[in-house]
Length: 162
Image (cartoon, one colour):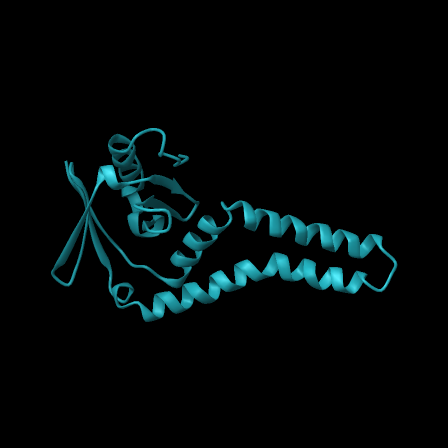
């Protein structure tokens, strides 16, 4: 049984993807932790460097979400493929995406990871490229999509939490 649906990629959808992708990296987690430590030290220390620590703490915590928001907005507005909905079809061979008469296929064997957030489901085809399926666009097909992915990818790469 094939499964078909349309997806509109918006700045909010891209932001959700970028935040999920970025905060899985150890360097981002470390930078955020350093930000909180710096803010803590601001309250503990009594010397002149405490304001520098406050500035660095805020910078470490706020920088990544703000740049992700900026890049998401730019990418959504400047990428021609995101100006119209993408049509997806899940079949036994893989994930087929089409738009304006052009069609591309990613075989299930090419998928390296499948994960999710509360807002979207992601199927990675490389370390940085992924199909993004917003739950709002999937509607009542969300569980069918998750089951279809789980059926066709190996359990080691299936990181979708129901």
